Image 1: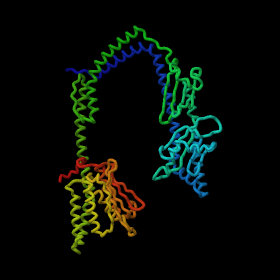
Image 2: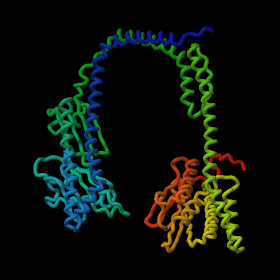
Image 3: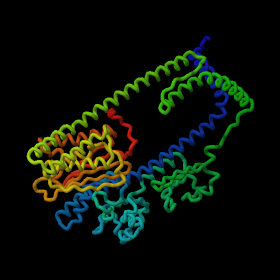
Image 4: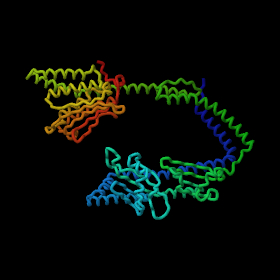
Length: 579
């Protein structure tokens, strides 16, 4: 059967569609051009008002960001503490640093009119005008928002500043207020320093006047908490009044564009005269409308027929590509009238076969790579430990056949049994703790250590799965490196717990503190092997989001081991060990 050319059909289709489009467009153009321009003007106006609203909100957000940065500025918080110091020299230095930071901030942000710092000891303000006049600070501290900030019921507050007195003008002022964030407390309510940044609405007023005057649109800016008008630009005073209050009674004469912003508590309302946009709508002549309908029907009928012949096979190919991620690669069975489409389907089927082969090869290679990596990592611990332990037991047995020797041998046998664990790489948490206890018995016997070992074990995770020999390397580090001659009471604490969806194990000592960079060169190899081995094994099994955390404390070191919380049957990693 002779196949038609896909490209030739496409070209003919394009010619037909273009011809029909030109004919239809030329017929309807004279009737719709004016209406279309009206709609474009309305869209442009909406876009300008949306941008205006975004710009105004950006200024509010800018003030919030600036307030948060000042409250988080460590140097600024330190200078406030110094200024409150009873040491005169230290207080003077703190005052100088506060002046520098605040003056620089106000120079770079012209909207700021006042910066106030309130503490339990005093109030510090920067500007020509002060909120202290008329005892405004005392009144402000009685406000609900001030109490809520102090009691940590809110982290920051945005509101109209009703207690800020400025001697000239009748301008509206707003403020962002928050606590300082540079001092750490166990309870944030102990932080007594509040930062209040008061700013003007001058820039927002300029933006509104520019857009309202240029676009001949009435604008009203509301403050949502009390629904008061902050600023207005009224073009049609004879209808709305100078303050625009009567706009709700003029709904039939105006198009209302309303933009509210919950985050900034501002609401922008635009009023456009309806007559300015819908003065004239020309009607289409009946015969022109009839001709346009006939042409459209013929064009649509031909286009649908051609489109179906082309689109069905193409749609099948596209669906195959779209469902490739969920259903896998599958062959397509498509009959088409076009040789190009058949060639496309054939190429698609060959491509899916080849991709499946490549993915299978990659999976096999990656699996083998992980097997080898795991074998190398796991082999770093066992031979060295077994050799040293057997050597110690041998020498003690030669000197004195005693009960401790028998107990050490028994512990070592149990340790080997748990370590081998029938070829399984993962064991339960309770088995890992038992393995660690046997190891500690061996170490105490081997070196005659005097160390108290405490166990804090959550019963909920005792049956959870963990990689074996996870805790032992860090217990060994405690025995070898944690304690010096000056340590009176030597303690090791082993914890297991569940945090969110993770299994967390901790090994903590009260020794001299461990830091891999401070370990002697002679000890660094063994210490590093234990740390890197466990960290590497965890990441091979569970991914980069899991591993080891070393937490240095004033006395001692805490090692935190993080793995996903799994029960038996949940892990799918195959170590390649069939024993």
